Length: 84
Picture (cartoon, helix red, strand yellow):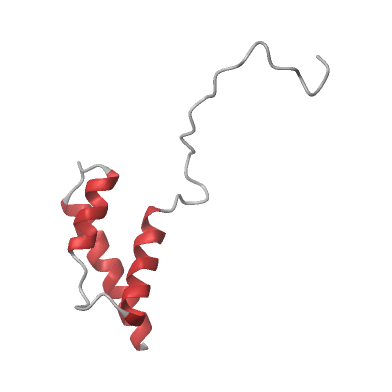
């Protein structure tokens, strides 16, 4: 296993532990806890880039996850594109 793989593996483990230990936090609170748990010392160079990537990957919706979009109100004065 190369060093980049170990950084990624460590980042994923730390993120998973923080998520598991804090199930009732909002996303903003969870992001703060995850940020506080940064395991690689100085926030610079390649370890930090891998950390940011792992955090981003954790919060990105999965392809098959149900979407939670809010229905938009219908404006009755809007002209239809389809000539209804």
